Image 1 (tube, rainbow, N blue to C red):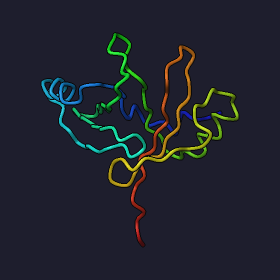
Image 2 (cartoon, helix red, strand yellow):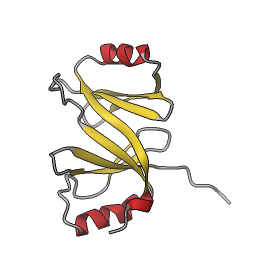
Image 3 (spheres, rainbow, N blue to C red):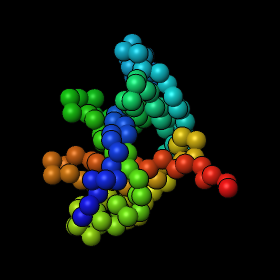
Image 4 (cartoon, rainbow, N blue to C red):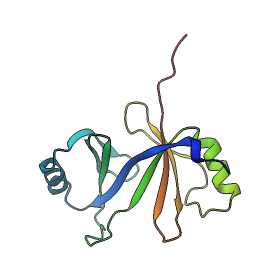
Length: 136
C-alpha cells in the first residue's frame, strides 16, 4: 500500500464545542481568522473553519462535546486521489467508519472524505477538497 505520495499534510484539526462563540473568540485571540462558516445540513449545527498560517481548526457545534482534556475529535489529512486511498485502506483491513467516500458542501466546491480508527481509537480523516474543473 503506497499512500505516502498522496498525503500532502494535515488539512485540519476538528474540535467539537457546545459554545461556538466562545471557541471563535478564543482562537481569534491567538490570531486565527474565520475563513469559512456554514451550517451542516445533516444535523443543523454550525461549523466554522479558522486559519492561522497553514494551520486550520474546524470548530463544530456538538451539544455532547466532552469538554475535557483529549477532546480533539479527529485529525484530517489532506490527500489527493481519495478514491484510490479509500480502496487501499479498505484492502489493507483498516477499521473504516464509512462504507464509501462521503461528501459535504464545505468550502467553495465541497469536500470528499472518509474516516478510519487508529490504533489508539483516534479518528483519522482522509480529506480531499474538490477543485473546480478547468475548462479547456
